[in-house]
Length: 412
Image (cartoon, rainbow, N blue to C red; front, side, top):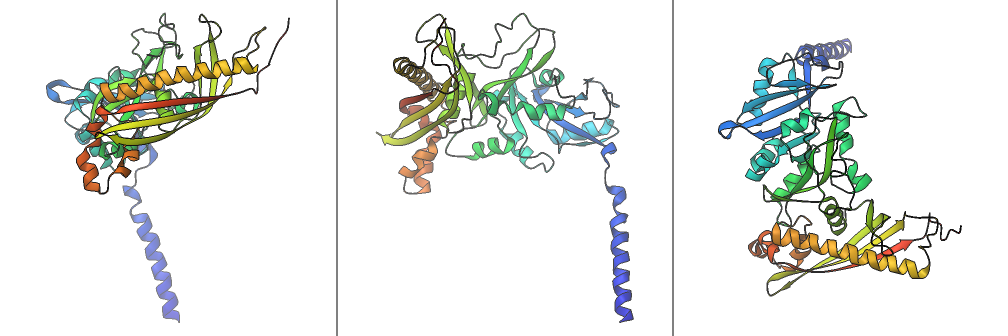
């Protein structure tokens, strides 16, 4: 009995000693340099220029300084020229006094130039890196990735990691873009049902003479994130989506086209849009769309995809004036008919743009077409991702205008 107690006591002591014996190899928070975003640009001689934004939680500057680095209010940018990410991390570790850690990385940012050449090899490499989380966002920058990081100044949040995290919430607030993670992009890249796409972003000035040009409204149906050359205070502008064919960037869609994309792919949350008034061509009315979905079907006609989309919208009218009387049965029907025509035109434009111009099925209509094939080999041999350019469409929009929160009539 005593021998048994002695063995248990000895085992407990050994466990405690073993636990503390490895403590010297564990890195404390003071010994790590936390990367919150990584930017990739085309370098010289086909090399990469990789920019690391490293968070500095304890000071407004950074302890580290090196050639090619710039500091912001709560972070520093370090840039290296190399062949791949792993070599870049090794080079960065060679002159930093802290070990680079990427477990808090929020954004992987690619310049348009690099994305046009193809980013597949980088995506597969990221998936093999145990520190980069699959929830990290993929963004295509209209300016260089380095410029994007250097001018990404938090307006409200002092910590860059929180700032980047809040930017992706714009989909729920506006539906002008959609957060695309490393996991999403990797799955789309490996998929046979649709093509990859990513967040489209750039830097815009908050105090600029081009505010009218860069105004985030949907009156301009071609509006996407734009690069600003002014030297005023700048912030991230995420608006629209970058469209890929396989791993190469082939185009972009605007904020309104992104709303159409989210509706057709049944990922829509809500949005406020301005449309020309059916009562006065010189004015606009504001609509809050709080629910939207699409019933999609695919048939094969002469071996080509025939895609039908039946869209339903539920909305509230936000616009009102002293003498407005929008919610009479006649005016309500007029607004609904106008909304139907308005969105039908833009949905058709979006569908034919992705099909004929981009040949990229970012809505993943392929998942509705696969049921037309008896075996997986038949589906693969059909080659949906290339047949999508031969698709033709039939769309219908049915909107319902709610009368809540609006005065039915005002009298002087």
